[in-house]
Length: 167
Image (cartoon, rainbow, N blue to C red):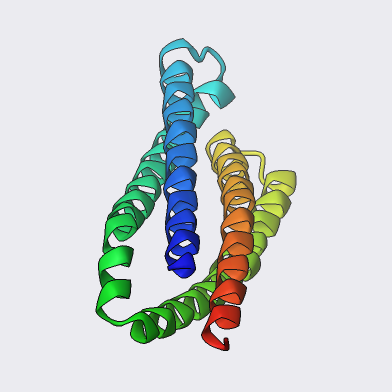
């Protein structure tokens, strides 16, 4: 039953990440509203749309994380009681796939996007493009920070599952 506690802790960590992303999304949406209503310069007015869309994107990400992982807290116990061996095997496969996905998307694609945006911001001075580049860099950096914690939690959980599986 010790494995269930680790599994539940992992799922709670994912739910916590979803809440952090949701909190940041509210902040980003408030910033977008601030730029929209009180922005006086052309660059300030250019920020509202990229911020609003990235805030909505973060809401979707947070919702997806929450609704994918919150039900797991209860279902883990049921799945483990039905077939402990199959539960561990399934979690090992899922965590391995998750690590592969994180490696590709978060630690290969997002850094390229951030670099392209940084280069774009240095050379393209049109205010709307500049605002998009800055917001996309911020969004990419934030997602890399959150997902580096997700990856570490996932790797630790995967190692625990492997150790318990081989006992």
